[in-house]
Image (cartoon, rainbow, N blue to C red; front, side, top):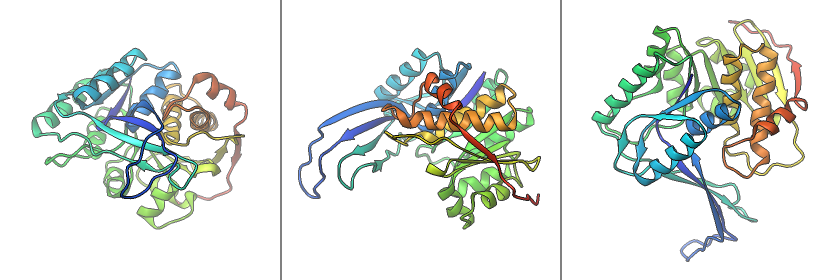
Length: 310
């Protein structure tokens, strides 16, 4: 079983507005709701590819019940404490004007020490049946300091590989815990390392992990490993409906590739196909297996002549 940590699940909404006028009443023309949170997106992708997975999260109020029910209907087992405050709502605006693609992300329910301890104990218990662990997304508000690095260390002590999607200061802290794989986008790498090149960002990351996946939007994926292998993978699309959740879909491909012991090249191929498949459907952060399988044949892969100094 693959275990996905999603501390801050959400209801993700596509919201259509013709225009937005500051200080005035603005009406939504149409809206759609989907289960969200980066870890939820990853779990849905893993399940869509046919692998067994579970989610560990904080399930808040009526929104938490809805997110959990959706996951369970997809065959994803859900674990973690139930909290009284509802899980957050995140908005992605669709418009013909400058508001198009704008995201508004909720904070999430406040989590107290008792529920943090419950979450941690559930994680330790689930490691007994987990083959891989994926950690992605933000943490909800709390007066208890907690980071993925704590969980990376616990999993590492049991010999379980961890895949982490993070940014900012938490990226640096998580690297110190030596995860197996780090996935970030190029902008996140620039903000932390003040480095534009995805290859140099990946090289920095590889000092503390075995696999680095740097995504660059329309320029695709740069995948680097400790065996000094570097590959660029891309899948050109005729049209894109939404890029929201593409990194999560790509992460699902990375994790499934490890579960299936795929080669370095095939890991890049399935990962970029999953990320691209997410772009061609209207569902936020979700893709379909048949789309990913079709895009496998369209993925363009090329070795990169870049000498890693590790």
